Structure formats: C-alpha cells, structure tokens
Image (cartoon, rainbow, N blue to C red; front, side, top):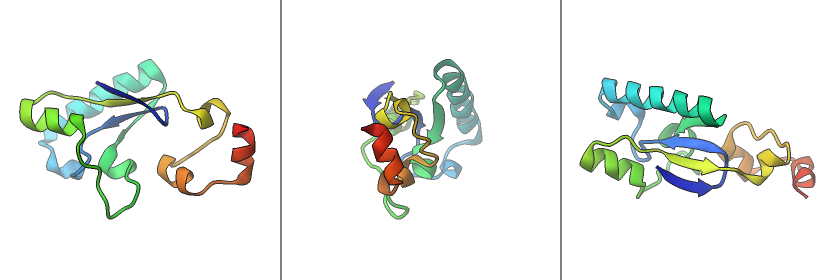
Amino acid sequence: MSYYTHCALILRPYSTHPDEHFPVEDLEIYKLIGEKGSKLTGYECVSVYHDFRRHPQEVTNGGMDDYGYDHFGWFGFTIELWDAPTAAGVNKGKHIEWSRRHPVADDLKLL
C-alpha cells in the first residue's frame, strides 16, 4: 500500500496501460480486493489509467503499484486518504475533471 492525501480514493494499476493489458484472472483479483477496500473505507476504487489521468493523452509513470506488480507479482494499491472538498460536502463527481474546472460554489464550501 502507498498512501497519499489528495482525493479519498483507492487507486489501482495500471497507470500506464488499459485494463486489457492484465491477465484476466489478475484483473479480477484487483477488482475483488478493490471492492473489499471500498466496503471497508467508503472510498471508490478506480483504475489510474482509465479514471485518474490528468489528460487523456498522458499517463502517470513511476507508480510503485505498477512496479511491484510487474517485477514482483504483488497486488498493490495507492490509498488517497481524506480530502478537503469531500470533507466540505462538495460532490466532485469525476475527480480529475472537478480539479480542472468546478463551480465557484464549491470554492465557497471549501472556505
């Protein structure tokens, strides 16, 4: 597990490849563990590649989760702990899109 404080999510690999890159059985294991994590934390589990890229044509490199899976075969996740917008009652919907553009009312809630 890696921990960050950004958006109250559970992030799973891959960061650099779509889900089709996984062996089917491994993707199912990731999804099962992610579902369990969601039940325990209340955080949605999402694919970094499909749901958490800053720009559709860019990928996030250097994720420990990817490295551990590719080189050692372990199933790692990044837990994005608490975040200010969620704590302020902001419904962000799509996390990355919200961070790019959101209503002024959301900023007022944060204040």
